[in-house]
Length: 507
Image 1: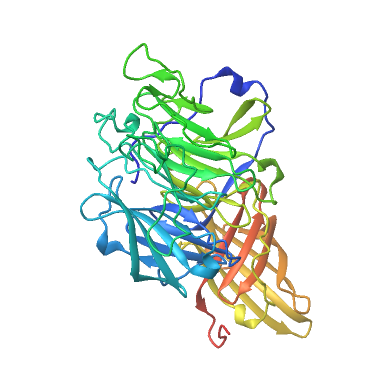
Image 2 (image 1 turned 180 degrees about the horizontal axis):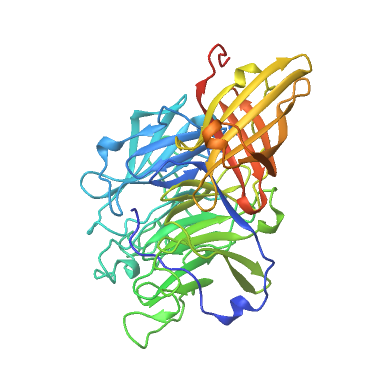
């Protein structure tokens, strides 16, 4: 696991004054890749998602296909485990012109490193690394860290307080260290190294590091900019009682102090009575009855799910609970969208504004209701080369057999799906129909094979309609399908070819 403890929902009554419309939040797995701790896109209109694994590898997900060659592999130069490892990446705002990629990781000495690399084709050149910054880490936890380019073209990096419990070294409020801070650097203007932006709030202030943009952070596990407004959301993992979401408006000139370790969320931490003057309270927080470790999210800016528009989606690592946070005049509306689930590591977005979640059991697309078909892939006509067996997410104990053939009446498709019902009992479904010319998509009425003689004679006593299943061919190895089976469930799946039917080759 990557994180220590995080915490999530706030107790201020003003957050609840204006109820928000219900969202039918659904999670659809796009890959079962594990230990993904950051999700980014390159801003190059390639429809690629870059999935960063804590172990030091970055994989590319392109058109629902996980590419076999890693985009990045620095596993031999990092230490990984607990809260250490490869923690974040981002792409230059001018990536298509300069191919610059930035990584943040824990080196073999246990210190964290901000580096710049150059991508060449589909991989990063490991020999191109230029180390920009090394931050000495006194403990192995609270490495924090997410790299984000802001709308101003500057690179922002959120740093934890250096670790142990309660910030024993007082780093978060110490202006002479970068630990427990949000820093802001100009890494794009110079041909090498970086420069400190002249408008950073503490430039030319004696005794304060000029790289600092904001202070008072404990372990900011995931921050993100709203891609439309430029506002910044910072999820800060709490200590004993609270998890919190901090907010910085797009017109900020920096210098905010978010309070740690004077306060934990809205509660004094070091003493029962503390001076909170000039400290910025969180816009949302939750106590440990609702979770234990916050995972910061993204503002949804896609177009497929209008009810999600403008909502900041975030969750809790321990409970799997997911919240929505949205500005409503001078208040923030909070809504629980999912009450429980598997532990979550990070959120991310693609270039179209769709939001994804990496959890312990894979990476998921978040949607309001069943996910809509994304028009990011080119479908191909259904023909005999499609014939074969297919599996979903590598589940070899259930799958689909598809046969496409021709007879005197035309081209037909026959589908057999072996799966399990909601009680765990084996379930056979079949469907068939004739195909229109050059069809790349078809909806079949699926029937359940049922009856006492089915297994004995391979002939069912009866067929019962259970619903419809729609197939769209992406390529001859990949099929996207959605089904609506009433009480048996509704879902969307990506099917991957397992075998060909003899005599029919995938072209």
